[in-house]
Amino acid sequence: MPSLPHALVADVVSRALAEDAPWGDLTCAALVPPSATATAGLVAREAGTFAGGAAVAAAFRLTDAAITVDLLVAEGEAFDAGAALARVTGPAAGVLQAERIALNFAQRLSGIATATAAYVAAVEGTGARITDTRKTTPGLRALERHAVRCGGGHNHRFSLSDAVMVKDNHLAVLLAAGGDLTEALRSVRDRVPHTTSIEVEVDRLDQLEPVLAAGVDVVMLDNFTTDELREGVAQIAQRAVVEASGGITLATVRAIAETGVDVISVGALTHSVRSLDLGLDIDVTP
Figure 1 (cartoon, rainbow, N blue to C red):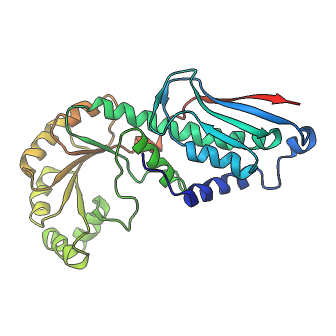
Figure 2: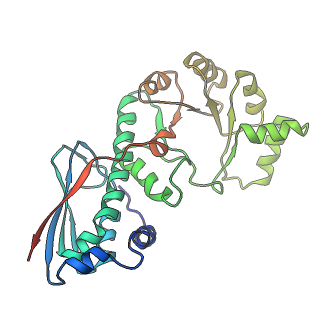
Figure 3: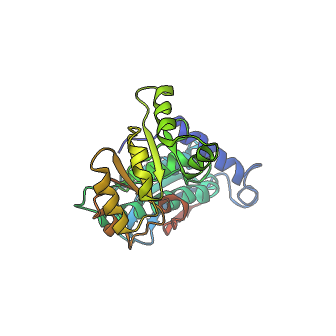
């Protein structure tokens, strides 16, 4: 699993730590002896797929450089309830101060990886690719998309700057101005680098031919029924990559994959995922 850039992780985690303890940890300063040390274990309360190890390590090390963190499972590795995921050792005050931020990252990112792994397993053998969307937590996109990859999924465009993606509101503005859809999309190709992908979202089958005539790379079939998806795949006939999107759940994703689409984008992987139940068990030595 490719690692995230250290500077990116450090920046995100530093901001989280500053938010949580802008003037230090008053409880630890008033109660915990500076000489006290602690050994803590990051433990799974339920089964899942791990993600966020770099953020966990950064939370402790940025709080106190004397803290050591040993990750016991790899990114993307499945684990059972009760599994030890990491071991943390160092000054007790630092361990206690960083505990919540480390857990927040581990729980959310592992929750995303676990949910993604379930979707990937559900479409196994169909050839369909599970991807995320831009419906991510502001400021956490890189980490959350890394978690999707840990779960075996793929990433959609990272930002508005990465690809042309013409959605329903773009089309509404264009058509309201009296523009011709096919010619407008052809003009986009003339304005962008030859390496830039162009994707267009459609919500009706009768929109397909004008879009395909423009030579776009990807067509997104948004909120189509499974019967409409099959018809759309047949009509597109490999002239473009076919993406299905809109209200997809774990209960419906297999049937959608079996229609023959190439990509299934699932916003729920990041916008409504449940954090995994993980805990930090601390053994304090005087």
